[in-house]
Image 1 (cartoon, one colour):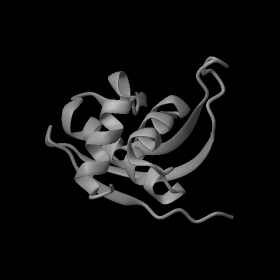
Image 2: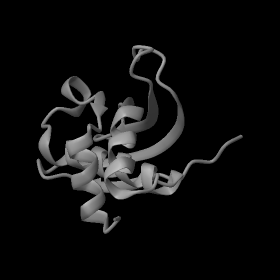
Image 3: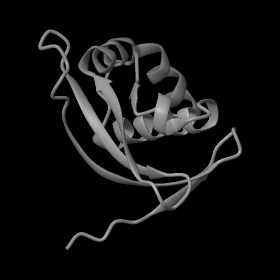
Image 4: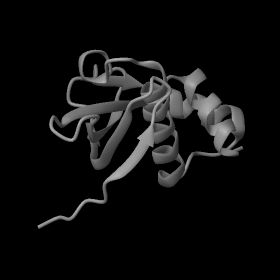
Length: 120
């Protein structure tokens, strides 16, 4: 049995979210011309209803970042960027279950969240 560590984040909309990381896989519905990794989190804001949130990290965004910084991101840095994108959604989206189930980290967002984390 896998024990998952539940974490808490208070979003900008006033909701207190609990979430945990479920796993990472190749995004099954991403077009083959634009492969992406899908990071899956289980999220709840009321401790009753849990729903999955997928954060897609396209190879195209990773390649653009690597080209401009001269190195590839480590797995930990990629996870950090994805988690920061999840936090942005918690801050900005009022109804995560209806409107925030599928998020993407594009090249601009990737650079922004990594700068916030101090990754260069």
